[in-house]
Amino acid sequence: MRGAMELEPELLLQEARENVEAAQSYRRELGHRLEGLREARRQIKESASQTRDVLKQHFNDLKGTLGKLLDERLVTLLQEVDTIEQETIKPLDDCQKLIEHGVNTAEDLVREGEIAMLGGVGEENEKLWSFTKKASHIQLDRWMTTLQPKITGSSFVNVLQIILRMYM
Image (cartoon, rainbow, N blue to C red; front, side, top):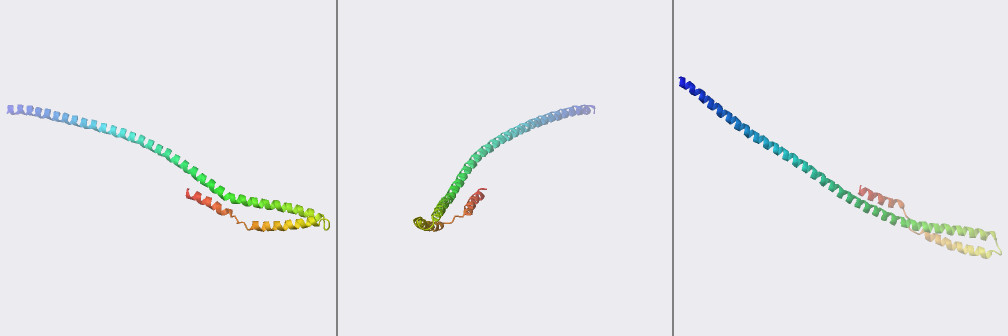
């Protein structure tokens, strides 16, 4: 029996060696896996960092392009408003010139009439006659002026407001 007992410790020792070797092999394998996981983690972090940088640069480029496009569109819209303003003010300016001409003519007529009336009847008949003739001619001009188309400013303001609403 003694031989069997002596063998048993040798078998136990052999089995222990094999178990230690297996554990060492398993430890090496897990070490390699852990090293692979660390490398994968490093690569993911590096890739994510590069992707963030690329995205930031791309969006900064887009912002720059979009800003330029918006600036160009603003210039175009401002030019359109300027054009509409000029086109809608021109009839007002024309009408104002007509009215101012009428005011000046009326002022001249008043002065001439007052001077003609100061002379009274008699020697100054020719002045009164000339004034009356001129006054009736000016009356005709005044009636012709009232036939000019009426200008309503609010419709032009509405056009500008519509343009503004379209682009806001």
